[in-house]
Amino acid sequence: MYNIKIDGTPFTKEFIKTLRELNDYKINGYLNIMESFNKEIDDISNRIKEIANDNEDAKLFMNIPGISFYSALFIISEIGDINRFPDSGHLVSYAGLAPSTRSSGNKVYHGLVTKQLLKVDTQIKWANIRKEPNGTVGNFYSKLKKKKGSSKAIVVASAKMLRIIYWVLKEHRPYQS
Image (tube, rainbow, N blue to C red; front, side):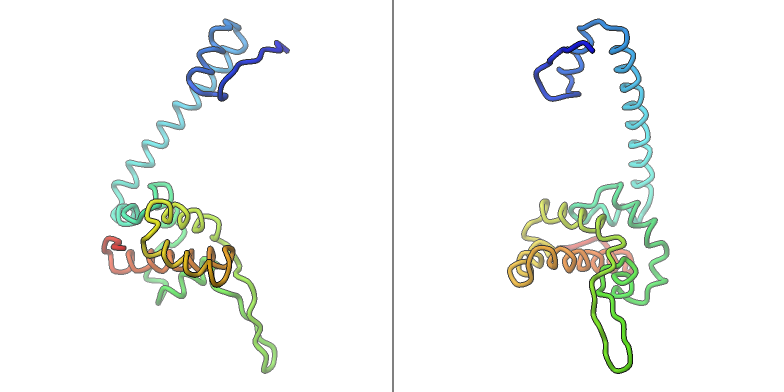
């Protein structure tokens, strides 16, 4: 409509300042709405941080490299009561990170993981490896990647991360790499 070209990365402070200098009521109206949304997002994020900091389990999880307050609360909401899992293997299976098996007669078929929570757990694992590349999960992933390839190593390292999460929560003790 205006055919205006503005150099710079969109929605940085400088970009928004340049847009405001155009002194167009429509653009300023949209920017005001965007600022209002950003304020709401900041307020909600701060409230979520407060909730995580008031939750003992979330605080334990946030000691694990790569787990933020969002991830900690998500894990808590997905796991629920840790005592419903007799061991870490049951949690890994619940999360969909254990290989599926089916049997017919005397034959047992081992399939792929069901990957229900793989996406979130994989993101946590990557964050953990970036923050602590020589830590428990990072070393485990690196060794496994050489043997099995990246995609299988991601799944197995994610399962290892869930096992760590299980024991941190079960024994209610901070993570130590």
